[in-house]
Length: 460
Image (cartoon, rainbow, N blue to C red; front, side, top):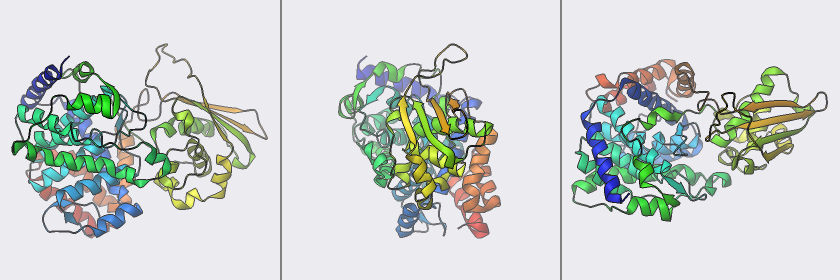
């Protein structure tokens, strides 16, 4: 398939998308994704680097909101960067299995900033998010990126550009042109930043989204995109291959938001299954950490390589299976607080990390007899001084695959992240705002009012 044919099919899909209301199920899934992402953004502002940087941002009476004390508003691009970085910092954002990355955090902050500064109605937000999510996910699924390239920032420009163009009600041809332009403006972030604890990693998605924010205006000014840019960027520069056929496969038959996953541990996705397998053991029997001789973790590639036992900071610890296992056993959870500096220095966790061994293994046969090719499985075997080895198994982390997240679990997650920042009433008000987007004539006015109300009550 040629690039021209790929874009022709994409244009036809976008034309149908613009003309046809979204199915109710798609709208509600997009709403859950938006609520989940907003909650992570709100809680991320308690992280030291995010808090310090946003406090230094110049504020103005008109602009886009920063989720922080003072109800600050700033230049839209700055708000996009800060809100995206806040979401990325916690490793709690949703993602997509086929794209192998976090999608909404690269798109939603740009959509919200644009809707706010242009005083747009709330009914446009979820369709815009859905279309941008569709394009970004398909870019990820259609390409085989180099192992050293991180997905954050690769799809952010294109996904945000398409979403914003839809939000501004540009024509299908104009939206396609925005995609062509943005496909030549991808960043080349390094995957190694995460394990190194280099927090620049949290900025790349926001930098990409800032680029995407500019693209619709550039398209209107007359800039032209490249037909070959997506194939070259994703298939040669940042990846080993790109399939136009896969990019358009099933386009319009199903929506990518319907196949997303949600996260409940504040760690990298590869850490989630081992932690859940250990929880299966802990639910059946009390395990005394001081009596543990060895913990063997069997899992898939590349998770089996994540053996870091001396993470320099919380970001690096989020890619360490030994840390995830030790912290889960000592603290009983892998929430945001499990990666505080104080926890990293806990001598009990440090000792236990040295007893964790990683091995590449084979998953248990599924009960259905049909293997899940995208399964993120793990088997954990705990050896102690006092009992036979204890074994736990996880076929997929909670929130994906055969263990999808429930609405109740997602509401609990939302409240746990937003209530410490906004108070119970403020968190409920923010949840209600996104639950009633279609009723808002001016999203920006409603958002600012909601945040100021929360601040006056309990914002910290």
